[in-house]
Image (tube, rainbow, N blue to C red; front, side, top):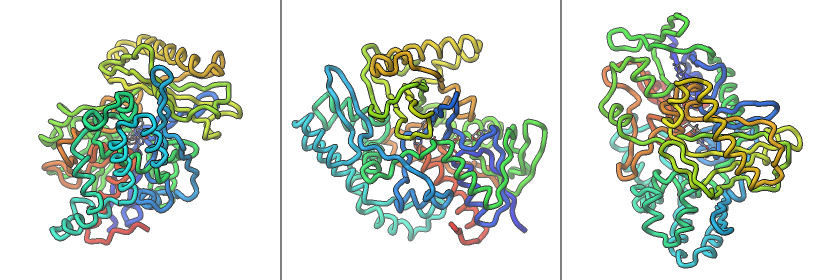
Length: 495
Ligand SMILES: Cc1cc2nc3c(=O)[nH]c(=O)nc-3n(C[C@H](O)[C@H](O)[C@H](O)COP(=O)(O)OP(=O)(O)OC[C@H]3O[C@@H](n4cnc5c(N)ncnc54)[C@H](O)[C@@H]3O)c2cc1C
């Protein structure tokens, strides 16, 4: 008899698990609290402008790359347009000090050496390692849960080209590596702006590697359209999605997941339950803390997170000649909770004409911000929360109008999303955008997809494979179906 799988959440992990499970002959239903797919991978429309709330770069946009092949298993990548940046980020610091993070590594290397000749050797070492990484693939075909002892030597052979790089760069944070190996303080600052510096140096190298081979683009139409492409595949394969269907409990019988209780009182039953919802709300909410592990408790208690606030502007002017990604040094830092922003990130979406009416532009400012900066105000009253958002928006508008004089008086729409917005919308813990930041010295980290003492249940999504992001979340959905197929003694098919 065909097994019935119930999936909680139509984010990228839930959709990925759904597509793979349908293709492998399971009867699948997704229950999503919102009326849209995508979860954190989302965008919203305001007066003709599309404000993107997620993708800055999507790994896997180059035809034939490892992640492109994986994405192509769950959506029609060939029919999408992807935009690559020649300059990933232009950094404008003090005294007209500018650095461009070129996507092309040769160009980046020459540019950085010109800016900081004394750091030539360190620059070459960094770009050289990124080039090496751009030629390698990770052993991702099989999930760890299915490794046999003979897989280990095979995996090591496959990883051989990257072992040296991993040895040198995986156990050190971007912050520490730059601090130890570079002398130019401006270069250290600039390279530290590409991504949060608490991540491992391998994260920075992998990003530079993906940009170099044009495998880290932006999907035309934005994040929600990308999620919709996966939703389409799921529906085409016969999957069913129930929207506006919030799950309030995972029901169990004799320590086996048996079904779901929905907010409207409906009970549904299945053979297996996959939670692709936030890990914290699954473990401590939907399962009432009965099947938690010490690792989960400790991780939520001690590991840091990043979250951000985004001010999106719809402008009645054309910014297509301006930089696409800009990190602008502020005269006065903007402090949002315990995050002191000395730079503001400005994303100019003029490269994708589908996001704004003709001749107009979308500009989004991003700042790091702790959840705690917003949560008390949001809890106190909507008025207090709105005032706080307006105060940030006004500050951002001032900065934008100063940097882009063409924008002065041309702002048609202002929208502020905070970590609280992301939590309200998806249930994500503290508005985190990539789960925990794992200290690099801790080495490989993952959360088992099965919880202690609970059968017929799996957890997928960004929290089980930090820092995950979109590719990692997608992969967890694939892996769980590989594990389920293996338990059912069926070959895993990708189509
Ligand atoms: C601002 C921002 C920028 C980002 N930029 C990038 C980027 O450039 N590149 C990149 O790779 N990644 C990026 N990320 C990270 C990426 O978006 C996430 O890692 C990924 O989308 C997580 O997917 P997920 O499926 O694990 O979880 P989610 O997206 O959180 O999906 C969980 C789903 O479950 C639903 N749900 C939760 N609880 C319930 C319930 N009780 N009942 C029913 N449904 C429920 C939610 O509504 C949601 O749809 C960014 C994230 C943010 C917030």
